[in-house]
Image (tube, rainbow, N blue to C red; front, side, top):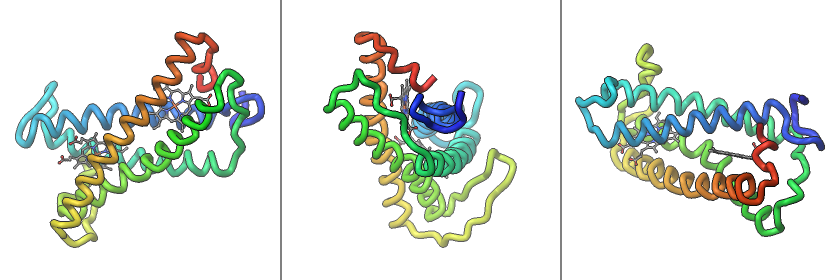
Length: 183
Ligand code: HEM
Ligand code: HEM
């Protein structure tokens, strides 16, 4: 299997980046919602709130690095031809959704980071290293980036539902094996 994309399909790098981001985003949505729901000084499944926050912030920054590598990989390489079974409207839809994805891959971690930075909460990387806080506290900007983080999260969720729905429709109903292109 080729490392980079080719006329024959997606390369290994694209597939690794794709599924790494899927796992990281799943953890981010699960952890993000758990930590907000349980509130401070609490715990869920034996993990306390602080640990949820530390890991949410840390994995979010890891996702930012993966996203940058993924964008470089996509920009420097080519894309395989469209799957023949996708209609013109579906191709236009996928194109839009992919634009949302690539934007969200940057916007989610950056807004999250700016939120905690302007709030002077900082990032305790995986609970082992309190990173420097070079940005001065600003409560207005803190609130703006908090809401940007939450709203972007909902937009991304809608895009993911559309993307997964389309892949499932083709794979399970039309049975054209679309999922195999990313496996
Ligand atoms: C891939 C990146 C990320 C995703 C997908 C993501 C997703 C989420 C989600 C779904 C929530 C719950 C929002 C809600 O409904 O209240 C959340 C909350 C939060 N996220 Fe992220 N996040 C990411 C990265 C980050 C990063 C890098 C930071 C900080 C360095 C961060 C800090 C926070 C904080 C502090 C909250 C709590 C918000 C509140 O107080 O309501 N996130 N995130
Ligand atoms: C269970 C969840 C998912 C499944 C089953 C899935 C499946 C697929 C498949 C089969 C393709 C190839 C479509 C084609 O061009 O023929 C694809 C492409 C793509 N997917 Fe997903 N996907 C999932 C979640 C996600 C998530 C959460 C994101 C983004 C955050 C994402 C971003 C992309 C992007 C950007 C492409 C285009 C190729 C690229 O630039 O990497 N996918 N996905």
